[in-house]
Length: 153
Figure 1 (tube, rainbow, N blue to C red):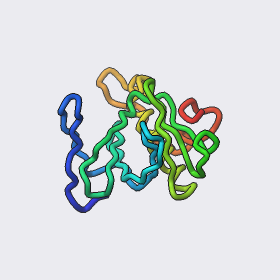
Figure 2 (cartoon, rainbow, N blue to C red):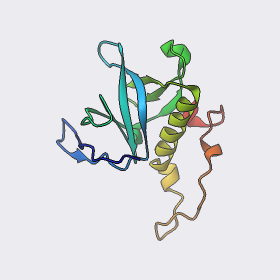
Figure 3 (spheres, one colour):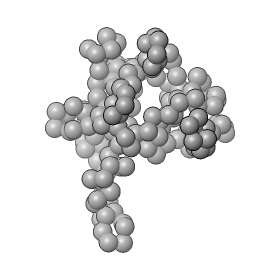
């Protein structure tokens, strides 16, 4: 999606570098800060199972959410008291975010949900003995915000 080279994310704990170019999905969201609980607009980059965020599109990402550890991604308008909001929950914390429109919110929930499903053991278990996926379909209806989908409840 991007036409320029973005600096990589450097994990402050491990010093491991993560490339953030050629994102699967990207755009601006507003995120509640972890400590002060104020709302800050950030640029988000979804690449594989990692969701990076930075102060702007060209800035070095300063945070990462590992979606492989996520338990849910779901709407959170009541919890956040913000329109078009959603939460991404891990065993350690819950991230509250909101989009500029309902469509953007739904797109982010769908994209994050697909990333979570792709790295889940259930999805990875759908391979044959050669390690190839025998199911060559990926329907957006699998990622709808419905009460039957465990990632959106």
